[in-house]
Image 1 (cartoon, rainbow, N blue to C red):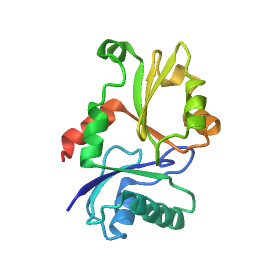
Image 2 (cartoon, rainbow, N blue to C red):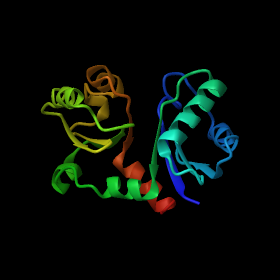
Image 3 (cartoon, rainbow, N blue to C red):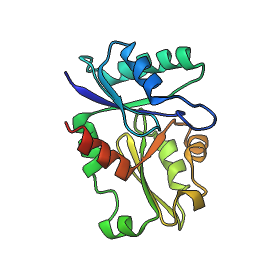
Length: 179
C-alpha cells in the first residue's frame, strides 16, 4: 500500500493543541494504517490504498474539523513527490548553508500568476523565495524569528493556503520513513 505524508496546518500552534496519540487515533479512524507522527507539529505518515491525494486531503480536513472544532488545512505528498521536493535545488548550496532558516512550504496547487507576482513582492534582502510546482522554498538569511515573513503574510498576499516545514525536518522524515 502506498505511503502518504500529510502536513497539517494549525496543529500545536495558536492555542490549538492536539497530542500526537490523538492525531494518530483520528487518522486510524479514517481507516488508514501504519499511522505515525513525526515531531509534534502536524506531520503524519500513513498508508492508504487511495491514490487520489486531493480526495484524501478533503476527507482528512472534514474529519479533523468535525473532531477538533476548527479547520486543519491538509497537504499530502506521496513518497516519490516528497523525495523529489527534498532533492530539489532551489538555491545554491552555499547560500543554504549560510542561511538562518531554509523552509519548504506546501500548497494544494500551483500558485496563480497573480499569486506568483504577490510572492515575488514579498522577497527582500532577508527573505528569498523559489517556487517549484506546489512547493515554495523560503531562504531566510537571519532566521524565521527575525523575518517579517510568515504563513499569515503569505496567505494574505497570495490568497493561497500554505504550511511550512524546515527543510531538515523533511529530510529527516524521509530518512526515517523512506519510500
